[in-house]
Length: 128
Image (cartoon, rainbow, N blue to C red):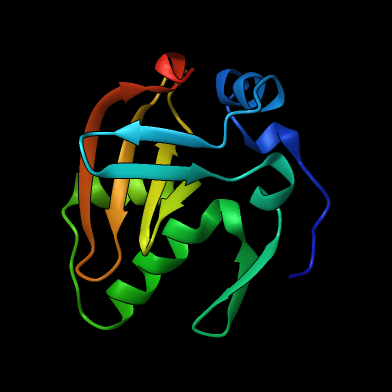
């Protein structure tokens, strides 16, 4: 994959501080969900979703756009959340993301097979 210039200003300060100051590669969410976190460099790798190029950080946005193109409708609140999503990790096909509008965002899981979103109890400040 092609690396794009890292733009730390795209990340909320709290998450940027976390990712720059940890060696942790995984986060446990629930009994069976262990998400691998992207490194700062990986967040800015080029991806392609349905022939659209973007960066890994915006993967959930690209998934949501594809879902809308095939007729899946999201509620207004979900649309706004997805439009401001920042993908930070993965577990198989599931994507872990945060909301760029929040200083201490909750963690969310996006399920690309059906477009479902699950809000988790853990927040960025609780990542260790």
